[in-house]
Length: 264
Length: 264
Image (cartoon, each protein chain N blue to C red):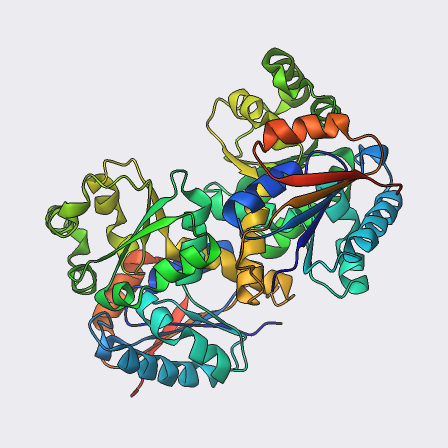
């Protein structure tokens, strides 16, 4: 089955997911949509985010994809159950894999989730984790400045990132959780500073890394894995894509792809 | 859906899988069958192992289980496709999760698989890994003495285990792979010595740890997770269960369970 996997995000965050998808599943072709025009999603209402996500799902479905990955935590929190009902292809989000990885890795049953305001307020992580394992204690924490920091490209400036991380996470410094979920796909681009803030002594769960693994599990179990390496991956962006492409080339160098502006 | 998960192994190896199942999915009830009478499977023919596995699957299916886990690499290698066709419940093995975890964790694309003779000769790991990602180089290596070492209870004697591990793995000492799959569910009971042999500088993949995670992925995706903690787990053994129970109580202390001898 040589169909593609559709992946959506509000911007560049989903690149942390597809980088892992391409590394773990090199035979899979990716069709990616970045909603740069309406980014960030974190401060929009759940209804708005759901509407955007459904629109993008509809766009991507037109390419005969075999699976849709919501590579955005805010979109996953807002839209998963509805999208699963509406689409006739399977839909995977990033919250479930991140939750499961935290349950797997925590030894003291205490987990911090760093995410956008939207994801934090939805309590999607807290609900998912305790639904699977109610012995785990979850602290959900909103980090509004992180997405703009990454989208603006300033994530390369280590001093600036350290400063921002130190300010935003200050009250968590002494938290006893042994595991931290990066509950937004933009955060792996600043994960080094987050790790450093916690003195490198917490497990850091990267939802991209984990989602790629679960996509592999799902496709393999249902015998839907591709057998040949794809020619090129495909990117669609609503609006000017130059800044996006800069991050894309830095984050995933040497990838063969095409990119196109669309009016969505 | 408060049905149980059926789990089978040739002996105590599958306990490394259910320990993780119970830790990651505390609401799930386990019904376990240990084929102590015919253990070890590693030196039996594929046909024999397939026959044993089908017989046990048939026995466990009678308890209205929702999922069958083959917690034995040799049984997985010999029986997976046939069992999936025969049973009307989903079947998960340990080779697929271990393979995926190795793909996820290796950085230099070189992986060693330690397993029984039966698993090694089946090339089930090599095939699965390269099917998903042909860039990964797989070295499959049979370790016949490890299962008897564990089943006899001698895995507590660190000196004896170190000696055995050093002898069996000697030719792998300088191998450049960065990741080692414990491709037999008995091996996690001696994983410390294996890790030590490789100077603690390789990723060690424990198929139990990984299988529990994938069971969670599967049950969650298909909305089949239990919501209440089970009263007691259930163990069936063909023959005398005293030595089995000793390992059970050491490996998973404080578990509530019943155990019964059956004639299979």
